[in-house]
Length: 345
Image (cartoon, rainbow, N blue to C red):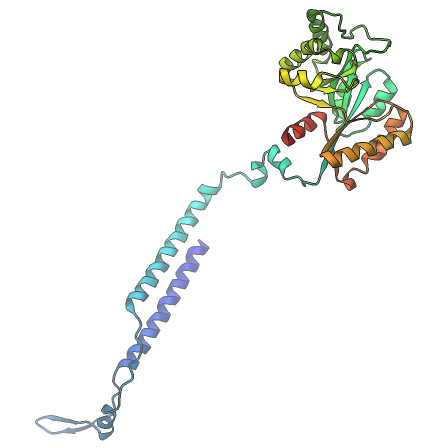
């Protein structure tokens, strides 16, 4: 309404100015008249022009510029149309814009991520062997950060621990026992190359059933240097992952792992480990490995490190996490890392 009133006032002001200008111009164009001497008789009036006026008639007359009435009319018409448009906008604003969402609501999560600074690099930290040692599992869960907790299938109080880890902001994956080349004490549900495809599938589904109550995102191999080298046996696992919509993190316990090739063949989301953090349970060793993880992330844009629930790893991670922002690094869940990797590729 204010816009309409303002437009009307401006219009009236312009009209008044144009009117005054026209009066002034008309007065300038009218011939100057001197006073006349009038002689009145009973029969007639006699008018005589003064001699000064007769002299002025002989002078050249300089024409006064006139205002083009057509231009004035067009100006007035344009102003009237603008006032009408303003009135329409004023009337339409509530209907046209009331249901329009705010900018923040319109930006999707993917678009928001695209707005992140391009110089930010990403790191995923996976903690294997969760659920075996109650003390060390609780220590890791106390770190409220986007870690990825990988729980062993034969861990204690699995449901209690993975629910607590999820509440702390961790992502949950399953640490799947697979046959190694070296002799080791193996869990009873370890997947072995001697098993038939049916036995592998049945045993793997039984493991997954222990995580039905949590939003499981994927798995990684526990040991498994022998099993991951067998494309045929690994394919049975990958086919189940495909059915369940789960990803595969290759712990890369063998340089000859067939994980990438079989995952691509089955259409399973795949990612591999870059750094092992704690082959030595020593604070400085873990910090050095974390610095190596940083170097890889700064070079490639992202890096994946695997650690374990150990005293040195727990203490080093707590200190290291405080330094990420200043280094231009961001800790993310492993599923997010896979998404970033896919975008880059």
